[in-house]
Image (cartoon, rainbow, N blue to C red; front, side, top):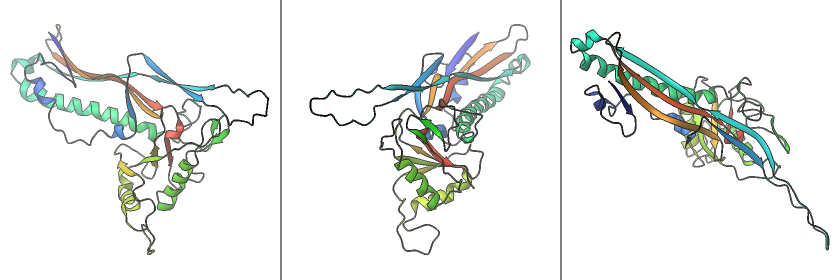
Length: 299
């Protein structure tokens, strides 16, 4: 006998009682990957996102002269290839025979669900953990955060020229970089900071910098110019204790494609008499436009 349970509207399990435990409250952090990525659905083997360049500035049209025409140029293409992640466990025939299913499998199914959640969080956070690593390039052949991203208008940067620890001054420099952002043709765009993303080690610094009424860490009576501009979030899966990131409102930026939701399946093995349970999910993560994220690796 076999049965399937999904994390959405799941049917009753063929193993009695299993369906009761998906609503259990685990000691887990909220879904922190949602603070990094926009979540999209997919029904394909992969998704491709192509960056398009708009038009340049309009030249002067002389009296009686012909109008100038421009061509919209196709930039690089980012492919999101969906990956399957899966894990399972076994309840032996003897455990079933001795009526140990209730006390054994209940614990295992919760631990399996926990492992799957952790996997998704870590895969998502690794996009930022590798943001300064040239071994993990995006569609423009550059790492997520760099000082020399290519464009039709030259190059642009989405990290500080000199890496700096999180501070009021460093964060202001990043906000200025965001405010100076231009599109592929070198035209000004209204890019805005949306959220500061920090590891656990920087959460108190982030709160002081963004929430203080006056300037943080000084005896000055100046206002905190950053207060109210945007908020911050803590990601417990970031591995660099002094790297920090600012997500912007750039469209087609940080994306997670959910190809298949987390699903639990049960079956029996004829040869051994054991019962098996497995969990699988299929998704991909990445970025199309590097203007979606700014940051620094820390000093």
